[in-house]
Length: 121
Image 1: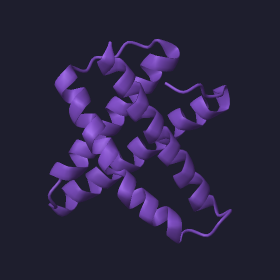
Image 2: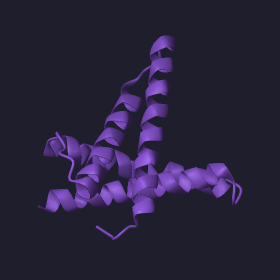
Image 3: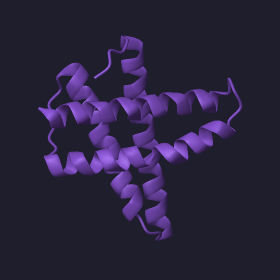
């Protein structure tokens, strides 16, 4: 995994925590409306695994996921890049939304790297 500063580590963990929280709120709203929740549940689980993998890599915090779940999470996280990159291009340079999305993209890239490193061992 690439070397990253403590600041990037902290921003990445905060980004995952924020994204997880927003996803949980979205899931609750979808359940209230009776909408299909399969996709958001899979993404939410993948985000939780991504966060766990970063915390495992950087803080030696134990993670409780099996290889199958980790592989599925990697695939889901990797699948988020096209839509995030598409949204990123539309955002005004220097805007808070663009900064948040930059951090989210970086955090997910680092989580995918952490998963790749973990599955090699």
